[in-house]
Length: 259
Image (cartoon, rainbow, N blue to C red; front, side):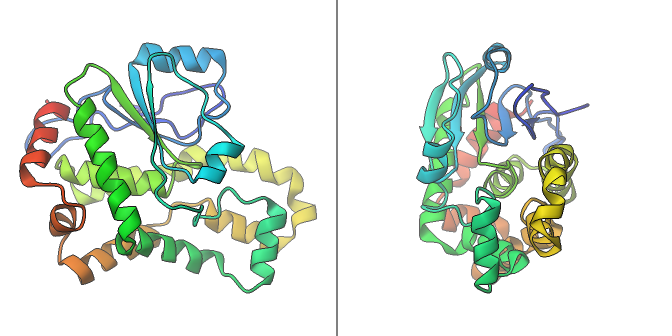
């Protein structure tokens, strides 16, 4: 099954429906959709997502990101602004000029990304926001509609959110990692088209940094997993104690979002 939802002006828009779970069930389709930014949706895209059943949009971006590129509304969909970080720690929204300045100041793109993935677990603010994300999913679960959740590239904040959801719903670790890494397949063509014409002007160091920032790397997600293990012992314990998602709430999600 292809989980990609093809749109004219949005990328990395993917169904979480169809994945097998350890409970012998499948995640329902048209319930959970992960995505990159939806600020450039065409009218046809807006209609397609509305007809697909999207009735809730959760925006993980910072206030600055959302102000610079507001979401295009989807008719009938509730909009939830839920920034995971108060500023964009992933740096994917930076202009090449701003990124170059930060690199010149000594920042390392790969180390920054690993820090981001540790911060998902270490930051009380991020934990509180992901807990609220689950509240939104729980509220929408009995409806016939779908929750679309996104950040800028649909890779890091969205990727970690998808990891949490898939784990709670009983998807195995290897499948979850494959879902996370699939971003590289869906972002690649867009990134090539965007940055290839600038290659000569940007220089190798900046291009390499952009490449790191825009990739989903197993080593990044492993930073989160290592931090979870060190602090909580297991992903289950992190979700229950770190996020405060009770076992009965998890069971409710399994009951409503799988079949």
